[in-house]
Image 1 (spheres, rainbow, N blue to C red):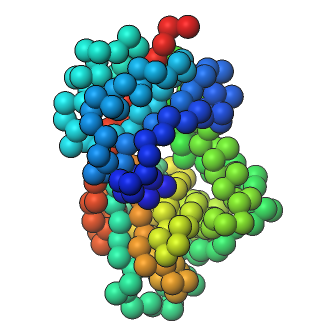
Image 2 (image 1 turned 60 degrees about the vertical axis):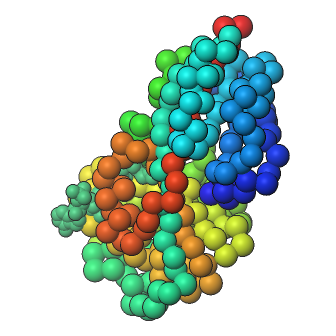
Length: 260
Ligand SMILES: CC(C)(COP(=O)(O)OP(=O)(O)OC[C@H]1O[C@@H](n2cnc3c(N)ncnc32)[C@H](O)[C@@H]1OP(=O)(O)O)[C@@H](O)C(=O)NCCC(=O)NCCS
């Protein structure tokens, strides 16, 4: 979550990722370097060097401008930049709640999803994330179907998670055209996944979803709503800016591969 990258006091941890490992049939580790962390680039590099996994997914703040070059020079792993993530957030505290927009928004209806929406969430996430640009797709060793299925699984597991909220967007004919999966951490909420069916895009559904979520979450006492995406996902970033989100920080994702 957002907090993983803002808590500089956390110990740098190299962790196994069994979910990625099972999906891609590789040993996979991850390491996230938070903003303002005191570890030097050398310490980060040393940890990476000790990692024996076939794939290490490293995320670090973009202001560590020399880290990639240093890693490339000192690593016996094949290393490449896989994406740049931008993190945005919106302050919900000062927001006055418009009760009408928590119910309906002109052409769109919003409702909390439950277990019975599993098939719809499966179908929606499959089509929405079919060609979604992300760090996995930068890696030719990973199969595109497995990458897409990873998003589907994420959406489905999230739907069943009682601590999270899944919201479905319906059009006037009650067709399910989009969804958002929201996670919570104290008074902070983060949209983990969201999207609109390609046939319903460009008609304001997503902007309406952001409005509805902002109001609904403010009503629930959430103070800050966070979200992230790849820097090239210009359309979604424009929608956030229109909805009052601000840029907080950015991260590079690097993949380090071992031959074995
Ligand atoms: C990004 C995404 C969520 C946008 O959904 P959307 O419903 O098309 O978004 P909106 O309709 O609110 O806005 C899209 C565009 O349509 C325009 N628009 C909005 N209402 C409109 C209307 N009534 N008539 C014409 N155009 C309209 C907006 O101005 C916007 O223009 P822009 O792209 O030039 O900024 C959608 O493209 C998507 O699901 N993409 C794939 C998954 C993804 O990227 N998810 C986000 C990951 S963080």
